[in-house]
Structure formats: structure tokens, C-alpha cells
Length: 401
Ligand code: PMT
Image (cartoon, rainbow, N blue to C red; front, side, top):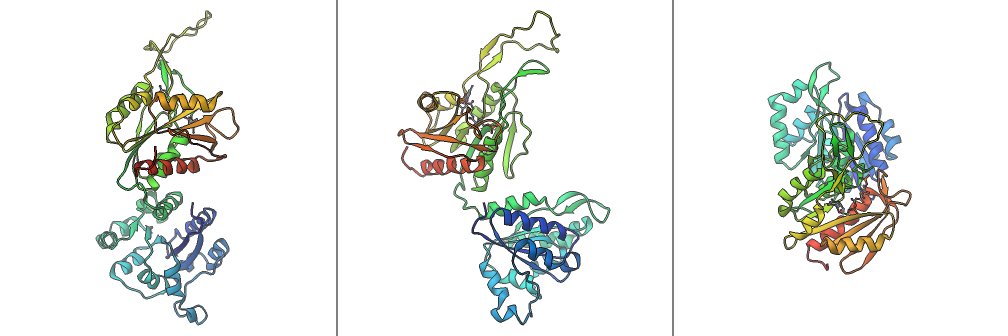
């Protein structure tokens, strides 16, 4: 995700400094080259050696170092960064930034850089709520700094409230987002995900093993590309991706009602949900008793949401379906492409290892209306999602259908 990117991590002095070490590890794991700059106070909490070992790069801290400043290293560092992340950012650092003060290595770099800067504050709740800090925060936002708000919870100072450094994973996600070209800016997209539950009594239902991973990956990647994302999700245990509006539903009928209500406003719709094709004709009001004769449940067909969308598709909208198959993959998928009036179909062979339900990976064929077929090798569901959005973007910009 961050391959080839250079991140400058500015660490100022607060108890959350130890969490910044984990942040370095995650940035490096995502492929970034990380350069850490520490304030003098930050070094009182964790030594530069820790950050040097984790980043594999020398840690900058001394504006007057005879060695590094012979190359004017603070200006070089300011130039080479694709992104600057300040974590933790103390109230003092934020105040200096708001005032334009440059009196140490880190604040000098902050005035000299033209890279986007993500500020991740961490401090005592009273310091966070202080009008001066809040005023500085507003000033930083006006100056174009991106703010990752602190989380609320139990703080190191034994007080409760806002001031904890945001979750490290959320900071990484924000960094990835800031470094992702905003190719879906101004676009509204809808993604459906997960299974549906079709109840025949209050505690039993008909469903399938969809985990929601494929749909959530699609929502996450679209949000990274700056789309306005609505995720209509069947029951699953995943957290909503950052910057995504999630609407939770249970049954196919509920999913259809939600989707049809907002479908006309969407530039693109991707139906990943494993919608149950049938639902019980009746639902008992109470838990059905076990009977030695067994149980017969009469099923009736559910509406086909994707086919309905295909029938009312407004001009210019891109409609994408999935096809989950266990035989005749390409032929069955092509039939769905035509029958449901899709722009392209993503065919999933459920018999393959590493593909389909619940895996973190998928192996799909993408079949376009022209008949052109791309066989994608096994890759993460996020990578599959990127491939899908690349094609959606091409179609939205008037590319060949
Ligand atoms: O959630 P995961 O664990 O990550 O698994 C991902 C997945 C296997 C669920 C996903 O990759 C996938 O293949 N989704 C489609 C599942 C499916 O229902 O396939 P289908 O061939 O039965 O349906 C074809 C298309 O019609 C799908 O886009 C489906 O969303 C849609 N459909 C189906 C039935 C119905 N009543 N209404 C629909 O809109």
C-alpha cells in the first residue's frame, strides 16, 4: 500500500511515544521508507535507538548537528517526504505550529515541507479541551493540516476523556488515504456486502458463509480514492471502514428496499452481497419446538436486487455484479452479465482454494460486456477491489463498455 513512499514521522514528547514505535513498524510493513524525527522531550520517553532499529534509518533530532547539517539535512528531510505524520503531537507542538514557530529540528522541517501533514494529537483531556488548544487546532485545520482526532478513554494521567492517541491502525489508514490519488472524488458509490439472514423463527434462519470481506474491501478502497461510499451490509462481524457510511440490514427484502431507495443517486453500484435466493414463506412468532417428525420449511423466491437495478439503470451509471459459481464459471457469469444488464461481472469459482467465502484472498475472472476477460491470479481482496475500481473509473470517464 505504501510501497515507494517516504514518510517522515515526527515524534513529540508525551507518554504515547511508545505507540509511535509500533506505527513505524506498520508503515515499514506496508512498504514505506520511514524517517523519524524526535523532539528533545520525546527522547526522554523512548530513545532514538528504538526508532532507528525499527525504521532502519538514522533518527534526526539536532538542528545544529555538525555532521548531518553539513548537508542541511532538515531541508532535505522536508523535501524528501511524501507525507509527514506527527504522532504523538503534543499541545506544545500544535501551539508552535499554529504560531509558525521553528525553534528545533522538527518544527523547522514543518515550516519547510510542502508534503501533506497528518497531526495525531495525544495529551491530557483538560489540555485537549483547553480553549487555547482548541483554537490552535482550528488554526491548524485552516492552514491545511489534516487532523486525526484523539480517541476517548482512560488516560495515562488516570483521567477519563478525549486525549488518547488515535488507534495506530486508524492512523495508518489515514496515511494510506492521504497518499492515494483521489481518483473517485465527487463520485457516489454503493457497495453491498455480506450474507442475508432469512428467518423462519426468531432464532433460526437460512443463510450462507459470506463474511463480508470482499464487499468491505471494496468500500475501503473506494473511500481511499475519495468516493462518497455507502456500504449496505448484511449481518457480519467486520468494523465499518473509515469514511464509509454503513447501513446494516438483515434480510434480502430489507437490503432491496434500502438499495432501491438510493440507487438512482449512485455513479456506480457493486453488488458483492451473497443475497439468499429464497426465504421461508412464513416466520413463526416464537421459537419452533423440536419435533420427532422433522421440519419442512416452504421457501419462496427472494427478489433479485441486481436484476431490478439493471432494469432501472440510469444513463452513465456503472453496474457491477458478482457471480459465485461451482461449475461452468465463465458461461454462468456471462449469462448473469446479460440477464442483469451489467457493465461487467466478477466471476468467483467457489471450488478454488483461496477464493470466495471468508478467505482474505480471492481469485476472480472479470468479464466485460465486450467479452474481454481478465483472469486475475490469487490476490488479497483489497487488490481485487482495486482492480474493480480501476475498471469502474475507466467506464465512468467514458471508457469503452
Ligand atoms: O463475503 P466474503 O466471505 O468475502 O465472500 C465473497 C463472496 C464469495 C460472497 C463474493 O465474492 C461473491 O461472489 N458474491 C456474490 C454472491 C452471489 O450471491 O452470487 P450469485 O451468483 O448468486 O448472484 C449474482 C449476483 O446477483 C450477485 O452480485 C448478487 O449480489 C446478486 N443477487 C443475487 C441474488 C439476489 N436475490 N439478488 C441479487 O442482487
